[in-house]
Image (cartoon, rainbow, N blue to C red; front, side):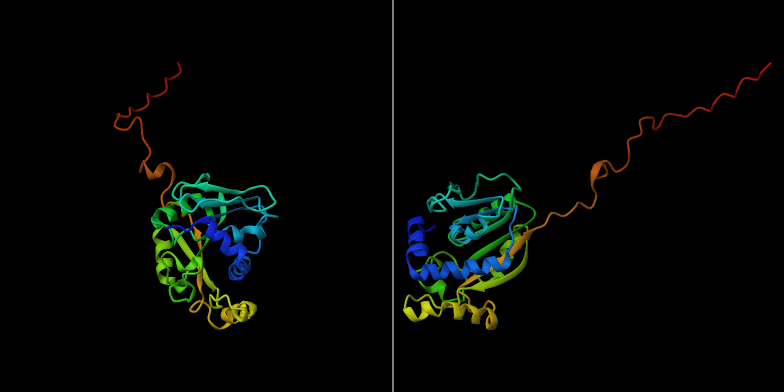
Length: 252
């Protein structure tokens, strides 16, 4: 079941803990995808807090928000790029997207397989997606006061297996949110330290969220063109007895 968009907005934009979480995940995303000039970048679920760095240089930025969650205009003070959509039927052309980010869109869906099928459809050949999900072994998945405490948390093996079954190739994985999900001042002020220490000493075990990058690969068929249908060319005169050419007339 999807969270309400108002609850998500209030957490990420109106609480200190939410701003800490937004910054930690967004910084990790920018480290993985530092350049998006001329590309189409889309986010599904409530991924818009992560997309702001791409507004300036990307060809197009799209914020897709599922109907059960609701939609809000984004970004503030600029032309709106967010749209309300069915979670299994996005208003995006097939193969249009170069980079896709999912946050609060997979673990809260009642039909995750259909969501992944839609992700695969909108990505172009060689396109990449990053799936941000609660880490089953992390603290944030056990905290009901944050959006990562809702839905189905994943282990790394579970998420990568599900991606492979839907035609994706997992490329790399990282984690974020190493600081505990606590609103006390000490933890909020030292959040940057815990993020740096976590990336160095505990790459993914203790992180609150998993971030898995996967690519969409389109393989060339082993037998292409007309030869895949017709094993040998059609010979129109096959079976017709060939006559012997008449000898040339002798000149008198």
